[in-house]
Image (cartoon, rainbow, N blue to C red):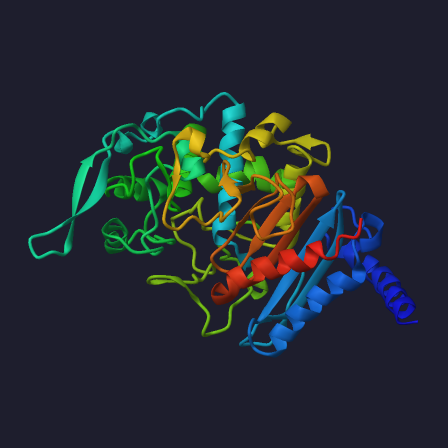
Length: 429
């Protein structure tokens, strides 16, 4: 009897969800979960966990979108859009996606590769002369026994591929210890350098030492910001102008921008809890209402779950959506292959964010096989998240992608694992 009641409840709930999904899924096709091999009851269990965490004051709210077999099967807002005003969460809430900007900028760069205007093995100094003679920081004991920073010449140039796979030697100052990172912090080149445009940002960054020799070590950093500047030089447009013309407008990503200065859109900006704004050393969540000059290809975009879903569906389709092609299937395959394996002579840095079982492609962490990683996705899955709490993954073998929009730096890694475990528990065929 209990099994029958649960099944009936799931069926009724699935039917009740269909109508709002049709109105809210940003024109992607929709289906009830059972139509695409998912369990309504189990997806509801995850939604209930998020609601309970909202009620306990752990997070302000979230938007969860699950798509399978080309259809959106779950698109649920929970909690508050802004905990200070009490505004309910909306499906079209606008979130700071931070490093989920990186896959978008990487796709934009690969469009230029397909155009024949950029090559992955090009030294970036071809386009940005300031990177022609780089140095690498080396820590050595000083006279007092404390480490001091010395520099040695870079043995090889940084390439476009190095920028995309995070092997350039460029780093983040707010992320982890070290004298090179300290130099980044002192230079004021954090996630948001409002008063600098991309050209000036790139020139100032090039004056700092690299954390590692180019092409040797995976280290998370501002590589994708520099890639954004390469796109500007090659295209002759600002990064946003290029992405808007080639990706955002054609894909219908109408709320994906670097800033939100328009008063009409500002009420839809999702906010964290007041005590959960810090994302790293000296780095807090920014206010996207304040427009600056810097367009950070590595961490500056804001977006909605619906916008990002269209981007991911295009990738899962092999580079096309709604009859328009953005990239070729072989290009997508190249981007989602592992470019960081030991055969390439690359080692993992001390903070290897992809984690066990994962390599890194051109803009994404890429799962090498079905085992090793503590997640139930399949080999070939690729993913990335943002420091503000957002997360996404694409699982081609299971014909599925997921977008979680959340503004909670403190609990970002917790919800990445929780969401994976509970959504794969909902895959019933």
